[in-house]
Image (cartoon, rainbow, N blue to C red; front, side, top):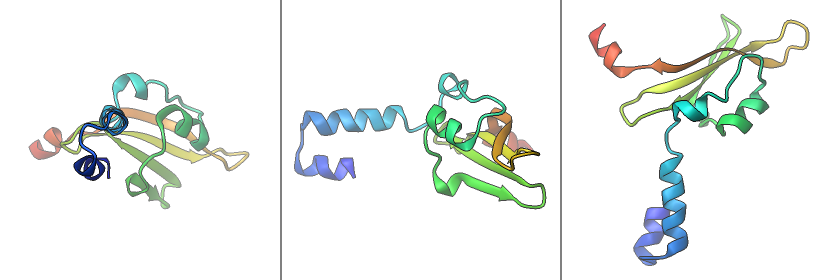
Length: 110
């Protein structure tokens, strides 16, 4: 959207700043991902890491688990946060965190 707008308003500093911010936040970094902690709720993770793309949420009903995947690079690599319901409240809470959850280079070797 920003690139299209820039075609009609080339050199607009606000659009250039917005594009730079978007590109800087396009992929999850290890530094930012370090804010995720076990026991956090979905709302806590959204505040710490940002809203996950709805296409990057996977539910595993047979295991009673939900996973959120955050892209880390253009090659398909992703970090993941896994949630499971708290035994008393039922609220989804983080039980596992892994920055290198999806590594396409390892998948190619298998």
